[in-house]
Length: 132
Image (tube, rainbow, N blue to C red; front, side, top):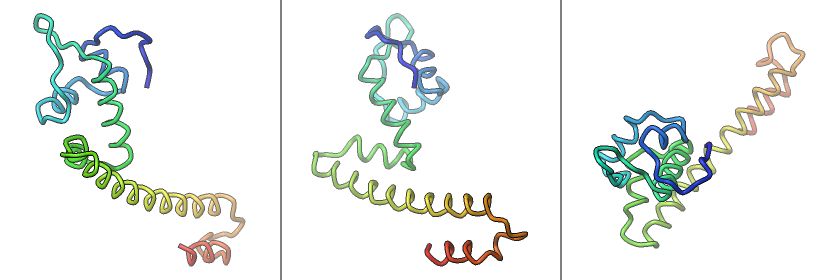
């Protein structure tokens, strides 16, 4: 994410650009209640640093596998305890996905370095598969 380095309100285009989004995504998040609507000056939306923090959360958590419904549940939790329970569950799921990705990465790395004509026939590759 690029930053502007100041605290001035942002237009929808500026906020979207900070995160590599399109303005319609921010409008959708507002329409569905995921993002608090921006204050308007005239007919133009003006986003604050609180919006920047919320969008950063949404973008990063989406990248971690959260869908919009799961994000809304966390952001709208009734209490800190409820929020923490949801986050603990998502954290466990993320840790599982990280382990799966690391195992896949190990297989790919071996396949790239393997001298066998067919890496799936390689005994070391098969040992890696058995450890999964």
